[in-house]
Length: 64
Image 1 (tube, rainbow, N blue to C red):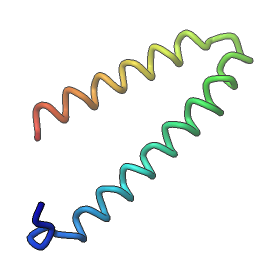
Image 2 (cartoon, helix red, strand yellow; image 1 turned 180 degrees about the horizontal axis):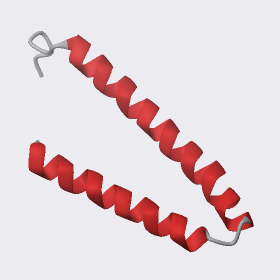
Image 3 (spheres, rainbow, N blue to C red; image 1 turned 45 degrees about the vertical axis):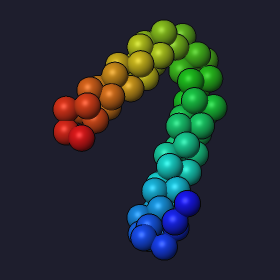
């Protein structure tokens, strides 16, 4: 495999952005969903999470 033609800046930025996105998703699921369950409307937050993921997936398919 020839690694000489790869743009290392793009690879590093891709890895960093993916890591930060994973951390944000973990914090959202770990902190916000249990807090929503305390207030009794945890089903609405899960529906919103799934709808948001669907919107992001559709926008990625449309504009990529």
